[in-house]
Image 1: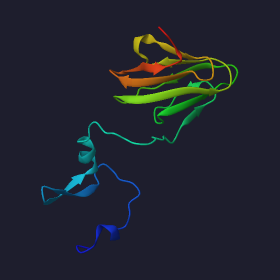
Image 2 (image 1 turned 135 degrees about the vertical axis):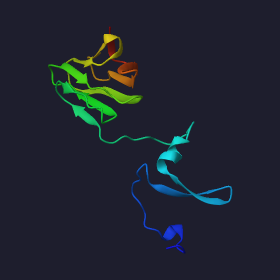
Image 3 (image 1 turned 90 degrees about the vertical axis):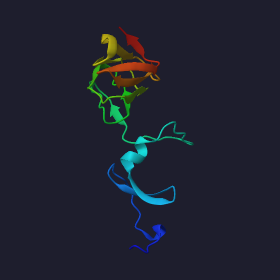
Image 4 (image 1 turned 120 degrees about the vertical axis):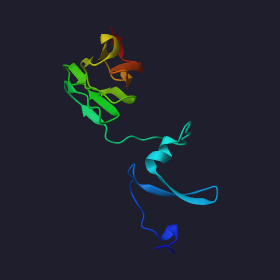
Length: 145
């Protein structure tokens, strides 16, 4: 194993925060964990598209999950209240009304005791969870205080 080339090693398909990488720093061989490598990144530039998987589709009143970054709202003709649980510090959440009719009203842990209404296809919002509340930081949906 000590004489193996990196190209001869088995390929990994995922990495955990504690996984180790080989690093040559100032002509010295070292190791670094994925967590420490990512912690030192700043001002990252990414070329191309970022694609998110695991989109939630909400087709009736209920709870917007905070495990998928995107929730698509599908109107059922009647609408109703939807709520969002507590998030994680600096978490982003995108909600977009993609089809159907009816008004959905997002209630819950929103800053300023706000509600957000999604009335028509194309209504959208970007939420940021910080200071123990969800803040509406963008979008076309109606924010009601």
